[in-house]
Length: 318
Ligand code: ADP
Ligand code: MG
Image (spheres, rainbow, N blue to C red):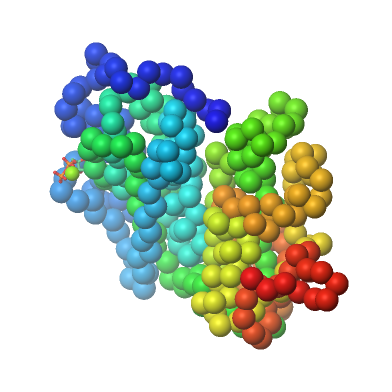
């Protein structure tokens, strides 16, 4: 894998405070201001405001070195991606971001890695409007747990799709799978293109503003983390409906089509995962924000059908 810091992992830097509070102060503090934060880092718990009529949306995701990212991965990328993946769940609920907490387990105190991690954290806090209001630091295998909190009036749940609705995604699909293939040496392309695709894997761009706008006009939604077919399948099951996807309508980026033949691009778009774009359903008459792509429809029945993954006799069901 790329993105290695190349830094020895076992030598604690001399100027790092050995104590937990020094670590917290240096790497995890001063990112806790925001319009909804009454109290951030430093007390027994953070305090966040909710307006009347709002519901609290909470989600947590954990990444473990060696399982979710390769040993030696750059702290900036690992941290940004961990927050982006968690933020994507708020986007998928249509929630307004309030703040997050971060539990970190570190095998050693590695100054360079932590500084890189801090950079990833700073950009994620700013980009997703998610102040870091608390957390925990402990020793152990390298692990990051990001808990995000948001406020929502009309949540974009998975269980509201109805036959006759249309099916949409909010951005092109498959780039992150191509990026992962580049990272793992399974796909070789020119270096500028490789860089674009690696970024698409390491820096997902969930759109929290769009999620909030969609919540008002859609019937169901989910974020695509495991691949369109898999995640659309969760939406279909929760709603008690079937989904029909038209492969010709799937949005594919120019970068992806430069990198691989269309057939491979479509396969990654359908099954690749890691894109963190939204998949949602809406009545055909709904007035939707610009830039969303209709990729199919909601039908009576169960499961996800797609013409591309079929033979002449009909649809293959997932
Ligand atoms: P407690 O004893 O209440 O568990 P800690 O000593 O673990 O508190 O942490 C002190 C303060 O620092 C708390 O407000 C906690 O939320 C915050 N904190 C600890 N670790 C982190 C972290 N990784 N990121 C942000 N805030 C943190
Ligand atoms: Mg603690």
